[in-house]
Structure formats: structure tokens, C-alpha cells
Length: 159
Image (cartoon, rainbow, N blue to C red; front, side, top):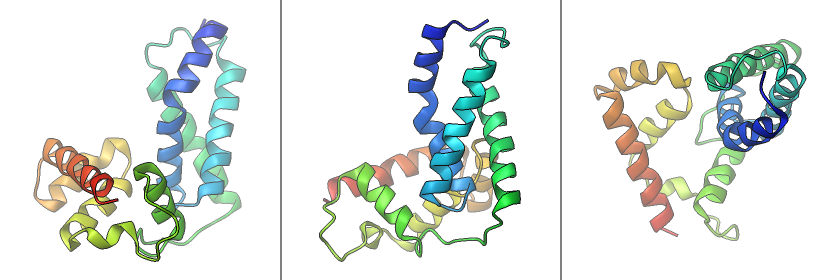
């Protein structure tokens, strides 16, 4: 049984991560991702007393998120969206990197086509499928994480 105090810590630890996962899986739709993330944690809070320990909670949250996302997509089917053509993705990345909002330039404009391709592959795959995405790009998973980190740093420094 997971105690109430531990629930609050779990929610604060994993909320942003689960939101990001939902955001990507729901084709970069901010409001749908927020709704699904909240639903995941509502289910968690309803079932926390039945869960044995918090040891594998991250896996449990991702599985719950998958189920919530599938239910959401059944209710509201979507079409694929490119990261470049979605203003919510650009706004989300700008918010994370503290870009000023009054500029007409996209934060992604400073990226090379290879960097854009890498980011799109990274954000368009599930956590467990990123090694396959890295392999398609001809790099290791560790190299993919390292390059994404460098791209985020480049975006932050360019403000």
C-alpha cells in the first residue's frame, strides 16, 4: 500500500514526465495531453491503496497513460502532425527554453535539418522505442540522448 504522503511525492516527481509522454502520443495537442495526464493521476490516486509499493510506479504510470491515451484517441481520432507545423509544440519548446514570445521567429529556425530530424524522432517515439528510432538514425541510444541534450542547450543559449 502506498501512503498518502508518498502519493504527493510521486505526483510531483512524475507529472511533467507523464504530461510530456501524453503530449507526444496525442500529436502535440496541449489540452488533450493535460486532460489525459490528469486522468492518469486520478486513476493513480483512486488505486494507490491497492498498489503494493512505489518501486515500479513509473512503469505503472506509463501503462495507465497508454490506456488513457487509447481511450482518448478512440473518442477523438486525430491526424499526424509535424513538429514544425504545430504552434503548440513550438510554444511548448519556447516556454521550456525561456524564449521571448514577442518574436516572429521560431526557436527551431536555428536548428539544422539533422537536428530537427533528431528532435522529431526523439519526441515522436515512446520511451521504450527510442532505441529503434536511434538505430534508424544510425546512432546509439546514448548518442541520441546526448545530441538531444546538446540541442536543448543550443536552444536555451540562443535566446
